Amino acid sequence: MRVGQAASLMVLMAIGIVVTACDVVASENQPAPAGGPPAGGPPPPPPHTMRAEMVEGDRLSSGMSGEALYSNRCGACHFDFGMGTNLVTKQQLAFGNPPAMGLLTNREDLTADYVKAVVRMGKGAMPRQTRVDITDAELEKVAAYLGKGK
Ligand code: HEC
Image (cartoon, rainbow, N blue to C red; front, side, top):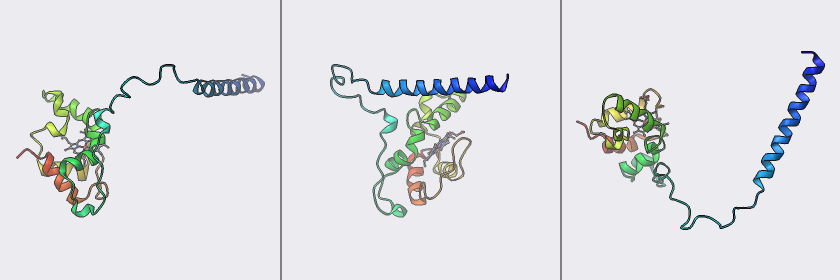
């Protein structure tokens, strides 16, 4: 391809990008559909977004429950549709266990020590969680909450 041809191709591509961008802007300015929002309001958010809020205060002697701490600190990955749930579900299916075992809260085989080790050291695709992510006091509670195995 000659230099002249390449240059005119570039100009054509640039015009194409500008035209496409204008289309996007134009489509954002459409009026809202007639009839308004669906009756009864929007549906509730999916469960994986409904995590407990962190309580303000001393995180070295947290007053929050293990359940609430697990929800807030681990729920983004370990609730429904989380990337942790997806991976653990695959592993549990490979072990011949039902898909519900992808949720750590359904597991009977986890021990508190195992939970603490995985959280502090990470495991495969799970990044290790520092003492800023979850303090030792908070982790004790989460481990006790999940650790139903002996
Ligand atoms: C960034 C996402 C993410 C966060 C946050 C996260 N995890 Fe995980 N977790 C994963 C993934 C992904 C796996 C599967 C790792 C693998 O096997 O490759 C996993 C696996 C685990 C396992 C091992 C399960 C098994 O069957 O061996 C435990 C236990 C665990 N997580 C506990 C926790 C706890 C407790 C927290 C909160 C303190 C937490 N995780 C926070 C992504 C996360």
